[in-house]
Amino acid sequence: MRQAGAFSSVAELHERWLAWSKDRFGVLLILLTANYAVLMTLPSENGAFLIGAAVVAATVLFALDVAVAHRRVRITARILVPLLFVMPFANVRGVATFRAPIPISLGLILILATGVILLRIVGHERVNLGTLFAAIDVYILLGLVFAELFIGFSRFGFASPFLAQKMPLGHPANESDFVYMSYVVLTTLGFGDLTPYSKVARTLVVTEALIGQIFLVTAVARVVSVFGLRRESLSAGSPRGIGQSES
Image 1 (tube, rainbow, N blue to C red):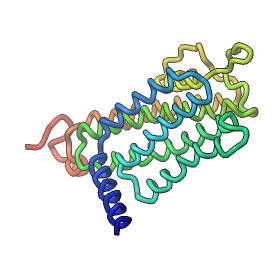
Image 2 (image 1 turned 90 degrees about the vertical axis):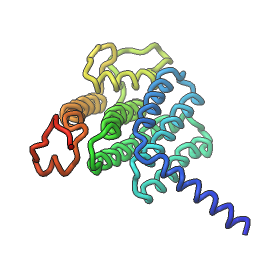
Image 3 (image 1 turned 180 degrees about the vertical axis):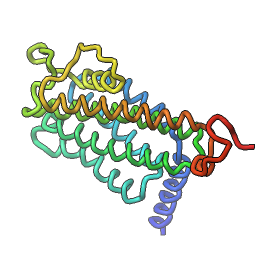
């Protein structure tokens, strides 16, 4: 009886959490900004690496709840994410062995979360502030996706040297360098202080730049232009077009 009661309480709390987190894209935007700050300030030691990865993982799980992902997707993510952090401690070589697989795995899960949010945006009946926040979340998530992929692939021999710049001996580029590089590429600032060298690195960088610009000039621009309108008025092409609101 006690076990059944405890299970019922946990289930109730979970349902309350899902109800609260639904469409909280503004909160997700705050968390994504915090992710960037954490990843940019943490040192490159193994312990700090795991802390940064845990922050990203927690944000991914929250993003799936915010976007009301399918139950199977959420359960799968909740199983896979903890496994990423159990494996380093189960391996005799420790965390260093998993400094490539963990970021790449997180990058792939981030891609999943990004897709779920995009589907949620499409399903919004009215283009409102939440929709705008969701579009911005996707844009920031794209930078985080490629930051994790840069971090992971830079550890593999076939993608090395990842950067054209020569790093001090024994001091390779750390995670913050790749996070910085990812958002510089995404926003096409092109400072040139960090540039890709290997074919893998160049492919990833060009892919991010293309996806980022295509998304920015299509999805975000479209959301802003139809802000406040209902889906029916858009699809019907009613006289209450862009720039006019319903009575």
